[in-house]
Amino acid sequence: MFIFVGIKTGCRNSIKNTLKPHGAHRLQYPISAFSTSPTLTAKKPKKSKSKMSQPDSPTSSGTPPPPPPPPPPPPLSEIIINPLPQILHSVIASNMKYKERSHNTLHQTHTPELSLLPRITSPTSPPILDIIYLGDSMLERLKTTGVDTKLHNLPLSINLGVGGDKIENVLYRLNEGYIDLLKDRPTKLWLVHIGSNNLSSRRGLREGTELANYKVMLQCLLWLSRRSKVLVTGLFRRKDVSDEIVEGSNDGIRRMVEEMNERERRVGGEERLVWVEATGKVTFDDLEDQVHLNREGYRIWDEDVCPRVLELLGGSDGGTN
Image (cartoon, rainbow, N blue to C red; front, side, top):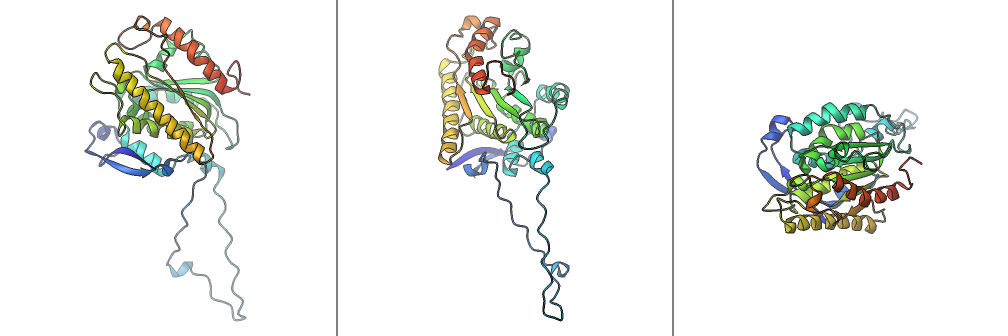
């Protein structure tokens, strides 16, 4: 089985070049390259052809010298610090996109907040966080319009939402900061809401581009916190985009989640992705403008999603066990 990921070639990972990407083409990757299995097959080191590396010749008695000792195992710091397969890291870097507000919020708000969190000292240490909110203004506005929701007030949570972000902007934030900051600060649960800003009045999320980037993002989250689950939330209706486009995009996200879970089942793994439809109880009367929820909209969404969050956390208050 293969997944197809759009790659921008000829781009360096700089702000200047991400603003002006070169032409794009599609690369074909085996889906096994993005497996969330924690075991990676290391390449065997090549034998040096240098004479200095050759074993000493047998002694005059005919007894060969003892073999060299085996190399020591990699230090624990490397196991924690390098959680991503290189191919996944490369795909993220090739498909991310710079946005000024994403960049500024990452470095001025999120980085200081994440840097204050303790780090784990072992891969078997319990998660540092209960939940990380990752996405667009739907999540960022939990801090303002949705400040009274249970979701906002869950303990051991951090909000990494950025208004106006598209899927590729979240990839940028992962590559430019979150991967490094969260490699040894795992969470129990991710709550993701992203994709609404990728919609337009003419088209929704496409298989070979937006949905491919969405899949890469989810794989990254699963790798960053190996025992975590990801709650993927559906997109709400918008006044400026037809219901057909929104529903078609949600169908695409849902199918992607099902396919990723199916693959884990085939290899004997655990289903770690959970899909939650956008509740139909939210109407246009519950929008503040064309797309953003008002206080009542957040109250309705909170009542629908928070019980699922608490269920996945395994408790009634979301605290760490």
